[in-house]
Image (cartoon, rainbow, N blue to C red; front, top):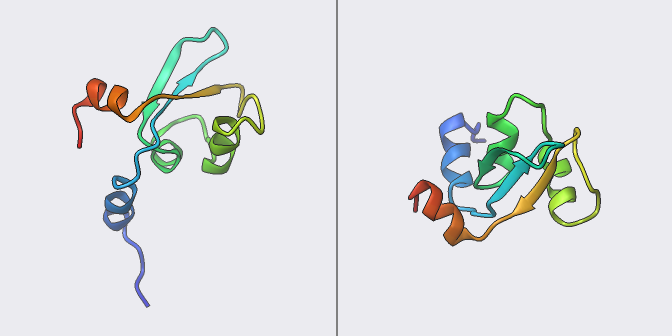
Length: 83
């Protein structure tokens, strides 16, 4: 049985681009992430990937006081130049 290392998780996560913006209560951009798992790992706010996905799929309006807005892959690549 294989134990997933952080590097393995990151390499799998990079394959899935579902980019979005994180907005605070003033509608100011707090962060831009390529997917919910990256956001869950890299932020200081304690987001859960399920809470993020619920907001992105319009099941809830906010998660931990923040809103989430989908952006296109081309917009994300324009901001970060990743592939």
